[in-house]
Length: 102
Image 1 (cartoon, rainbow, N blue to C red):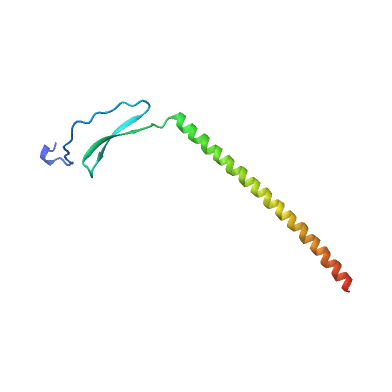
Image 2 (image 1 turned 45 degrees about the horizontal axis):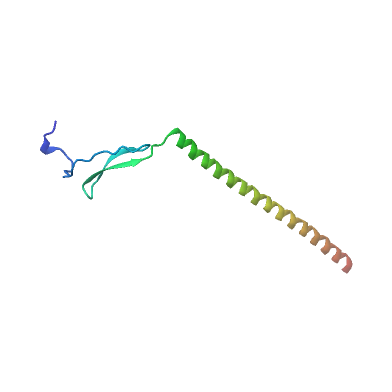
């Protein structure tokens, strides 16, 4: 076992830091090496409920995106059909004009 003088680490001179109990939050002891300070980081722990809620939100966003893409695809198909009709009409008109000139 190394002696106290050989142990690696950073010595900080701070008053005793006390944990605050905050409802629905979890804490972890952190160190700011630039300021040589200890502090507690408080965060909301991930639970099954929050995971399910997050996945439900992603599902809603994906469904909205799919709906938008389906509408855009239908609009594109309608445009293609309209263009095909126009091309068909133009072919008939060209054929008619060629028949008149011959």
